[in-house]
Each structure stands twice: as C-alpha cells, then as structure tokens.
Length: 307
Image 1 (cartoon, rainbow, N blue to C red):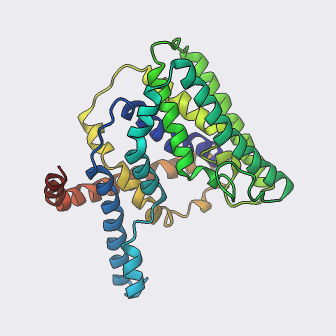
Image 2: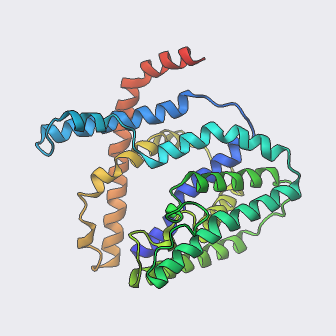
Image 3: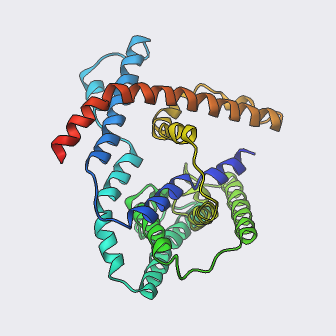
C-alpha cells in the first residue's frame, strides 16, 4: 500500500514545477522578494527548531550549531529560487522558437536529461555498479532529479504545454485516467523490484527525473487543467500553509511510528495516515499564520526598499 501511495505522490514536486512553467512563461517580470521570503522562512524555522531542541535538552547551544541554523540548506528552496530568477531568460529563448522547434527541443531535452540518466541509474542498480561520469546530469549520476537540470526540464515542458495549447487536441478524460493508472502501476512495480536489489538509498523508480514520474505529472496536470474552475476561500487560505508543511513535516513524521502499522490492517494504516496528514497540516497552517503575523511588517518594509 505504501508503495502505491508513494508512486502516486512522487510526482508532486514535478507537478508544481510544471504548473510554474505553464504560468510563469507568460511574463518575464520577477519579484526578488519572493525567493527572499522563501529563504527567510527556511532560516526562521531552522532557528526556532534549534531553540526548541535546546530548551528540551535535545541540543546544546554552540557557535557552530547557531551558524548552521542560519544557512538556508533546503534543496527545493535553493533550486526553485534559482529557477525563478533565470526563468525569464528561458522564456525569451522559447519565444524565439517555432512550434516545431519547441517540440524538438522538449523531445531532445527529455531524452538527454530524463531517459538517459534514468537508464544509467537503473543499469547501475541491476549490475550493482555506480557509473561515475556516464550520466548527462552530473559526474555521480542523475542526483535522482534533485537538480536544477530536472527543474529546468520540467519548467520547459510546462511552458511548452502553454505555448502549444491551441494546437493540441483535447485529451479524452478516460484515456488520460487510463494512462495515469498504467503509469502508477508501472512505477509501483518498478519500485517493488528496486526493493529487492538496489545499490542506492534512493530508488530509480521514484527519481524525480524518471520519465514515468514526469509523465505522471503531465497527465495529472492535463486532467486538472480540463476541470471546471473551482474557487473556495477556505481552500485558498489553507493552501497558503503548504510551504510551511513542506518545511516542518519531517519534524512530525519522525514521531508517527508508521512502521507499527505497515504490516497490519490496510484500513487502519490508511486511517492512521489520513488522520496524521490532517493533524500535521492543521498544526503547520496555524504555525504559518503565526509566522505571517510576525513577519508581515518586515516583508512589507523590505519589498518597498526592493522596488
């Protein structure tokens, strides 16, 4: 069950980048305050958690520990901020290409930076050998998609979907759902095989650069895009806390002891997961609201100075 759930949710990061590409490709204007806000939030919660750990006796106050909390070492924030800043130049490039050239570009990039790196990683798992210098992403492999290369690839795919929207035939919902189901099943089976024999701590099935994981994100995006517009003030307000959930989730997940439920009743496992997801989200959302109240005046002042 956990394999299936992971195979369904693994495309979340790619889906977010895909959506960013779809919307950000329309404009080359960027607000520097946005990546700054993300980085400051990372530092803020890092400092707060460090102080809490000191108070409960889990950590001791040291100069090195304090300095480390001030370093925004969060892979997603750094990569997304980088993508956000350089994306206007990607947009300029895409605008100069014809529809046919855009299509060729996406195919070439997908083959070089998704298909090939995954083949290299998969062959390494099968043969029990790490192929140093063979991947097109980096010397030590694909980095499992935790790279600016994958972010740029998925961003460009999202931008391509926007630019080619008018020329694309409307996808049948049933066909998309069938393709999504098959993709999830293949990823799940792949991950199960990875469990039997793998060289790395990460599974190639769940790499962000895995072609199937990227395709899964594209299919879900197309399904959502074709849905009727939905607006809810409550949902929109709750959605604002997503990034805080991303930053703090591991702090709570470590306390869940999900391993106790893995081999038990499936319904109990699902109930346990659902309940904890809801509780964690609500707690993180409340923390986000408190954080916003504290930092809003500072960011308003900073934004005025950056204008």
